[in-house]
Length: 267
Image (tube, rainbow, N blue to C red; front, side, top):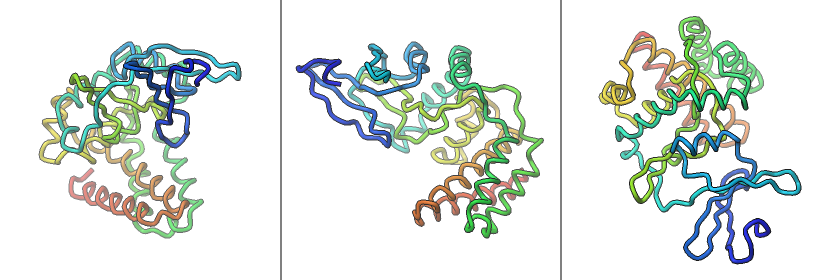
């Protein structure tokens, strides 16, 4: 990295699981650097969804390094993520034909329910604890029984990792959604469900959906819960495989909450 920027720059790791992200600073100049970011980043930058892309350079070993503006700001907290600006930005992303066209060029496959269900079943079969769990048994039965009822024809770009730490508010009030490594093309209910279930009080769901541009419906709720259940099953097995029992129990608790909602709301 020093070779690209020059000796006057100070570079230090930005954290993250891959170890491929860095901060760089020289006097008043600040950059966020990342190795092998998706080409998708350029479109996200052009639409103002992520901080501005400053340049892209290819290293001798073939790696591509991107530099973005390093903005002073903060991640949204759990209360701030309830602001209408979050619903507005997510709606903008889901309705962007430019984002969809670019991601389809990069990622040829889309998330479809039948393939997703088969993948989940394979994960369950490979986990003794998951196979023996009554809750997961009931969850799989729900996924199977609603498979034909949750298909949605309009595929969009989904972020698929809407943790509140990935929503960034800059010092001048601009809202960004960062960390697009898990983005896929699929049903917008995957993103909507995660925001609603994790951060929005249930009595405010209709209002949040209004800011997004949707009316609440049993069809939307069923699709949301279908994908949320998939996430909790996979999260449980992932945690079990890594002997993270506390995280596994959290996923199981969330799964049981979802199953109760499905029963209470007749989904």
